[in-house]
Length: 44
Image (cartoon, rainbow, N blue to C red; front, top):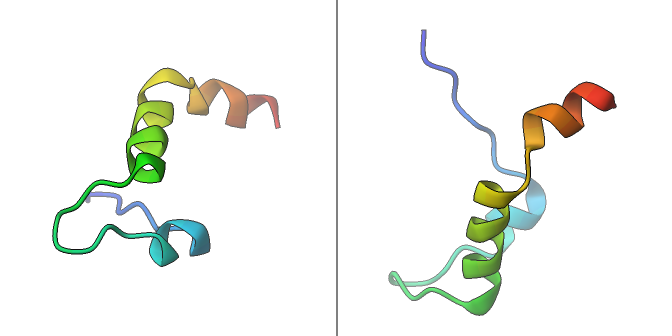
């Protein structure tokens, strides 16, 4: 079974329109790559 990632309220409200990438979406995409989210979640 494939797990689907649910979008947060912030993510759903800031989707780029017609494929245009805003600075915010570029920043959030980079943070997804750089931050070790599973390790941080494990600490919480």
